[in-house]
Image 1 (cartoon, helix red, strand yellow):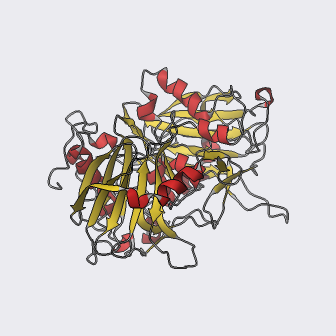
Image 2 (tube, one colour):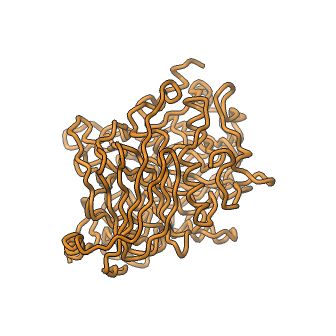
Image 3 (cartoon, helix red, strand yellow):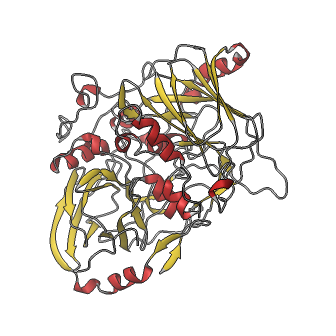
Length: 289
Length: 252
């Protein structure tokens, strides 16, 4: 692994080392991946997947562009969950091949790494510039849907995920207080006002993303009522999400340990309690009061 | 009532209420103030209808700032609602939004005295997205573990009887950033704030506010150079005012 590999995202706010060769080798063997389960998601009820360390989760469009929201947490410790804000600092706003999705403190480790992203925007003269697969976009929130004029009675991705979390006996307000990743979603950054605009996706039937699980995860998936990112319809009956195939591949490799050997790492005992979860006692960090 | 929002969204906003509030600033009565020493964290409570200022005492100093509902800390600042409804930067008349299901304004910015310098990236102060530094970043970049923002925020929440689990998304006051419209990256530039500059908020709900005086100072040193040279850091003053004005409530 070269230094270039370690700091592959040098324009990022908080770059972190990545062994891209490890992931390139996995991608090169994609033809050997063996599916262990396949489901089709085509409604606004969401789907919870148990993904084991070393497995690959693939999302493939079956019927044209469809935005898929993704959130995840550690099944053994739901306090460890996807943290969009810190992922944004390391990966930028848009995900693509080799992007990683990072978890909350205290471990603050990679949870999923993106291996495949086949969405390829055209370069026609009438094409509106934008990028795909944002994090921190907020388009899955009920307030976004309402402010966009979406009809009532439609379950937004956040509401779909609330139901999935509640079935596990967890408090959704303690789990779903971070944002998600939005695959196949296209957004444009307005350079002067610094606002984001949702645009119709450039994704096509057959496009896919594949993500490598760095640890055991519960992954929540939810289809967007924006469908491909077009403005919402005026009537609830007009929302018809498009089918997405969700495939879990058998374990393709043992994840690399985190942190990488020789990389500086804090003493986690400053933050974890005796059971190995983040301490809930209201005290400052020892030695750093 | 004015409807405003980014691009295709319509977000109700009573701009006249805030213009009147700002015009009445001379009638605000100081309630208390506190000087936070360099490199520290601090937590404080603000009543609904009070205003609070974060003042640069000596020079530019980034403040990683968390906002929670003082009565229910499960409701707190939500960076993605903020980005969706208000964009990436905070300035006068920007509202600060909380988590779903309430998804309501927690406070509203009523003053921002920082004057950004023109630069090719169109960056400016008070970023809504950049999270806070933590011991992982410092160990990675510098091999040291100072009082990071995570540790400072933890100390600030402990002052309010809350644990590190209350630390969440934050706003980076006085941090000079902006989204690159092509790459989606968020480059950091040296801060423009000067001694005496402040940002002021009007509390829409009872708030627990926790600030960290970032060990990265004004953000002038790239993370890869942390630990290679000393980062200057500066103190900050918190000022709280009674406005005598009750919030509008939400929803309108």
